Amino acid sequence: MKTTLAVSILTIAGVLLVGYNILTRHQETVHLIHAKIEEEYATQRAQAEVAALVGQLEHGRKRLPGTPDPSWLVTAVVALAEQEHLRFTTINQESPRALQQFTKLAATLEFTASYHQLGSFLDRIERSERFIRVEQLEVTAPRADGEEASIRVTLSTVYLPPVRSGGGA
Image (tube, rainbow, N blue to C red):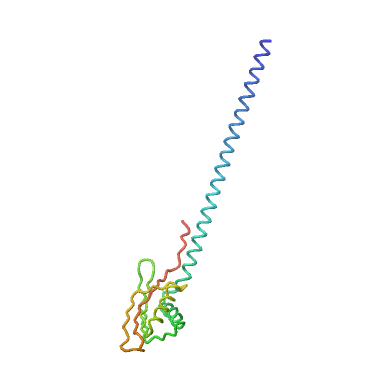
């Protein structure tokens, strides 16, 4: 009977040891699966963030000229001015100025306008889907009633060259 009891105890101990090893390996597998799931979630979140940033970048790029040509700026501004029935007396395009990672494009425009027209024109520039910055604004008051003010405005934008993809080792 003692032998049977000893064999039973050894058998139960062996079964428990095998069961413990199987359970431990199963728990390790579960932990690995959870880690892979978390890693995949992190990858998907990162991909979604990158996609959102690329979308913002593309939206921003659409607001900028496609070439480093100041005529883009003049064309955009003249289109906005025509909506206010403004006529320019002088348009001077500045030479493109290369800076660190972009090129600054600028133009100085002169015209006459009522204060209301000027305000509406500046509002159109600010709300434009194009990125245009007012660098300088000079207003000379009318000399007599009924005359319009003389306006000189310098506007600018930037050209960003296409991003070069860094491939290869």
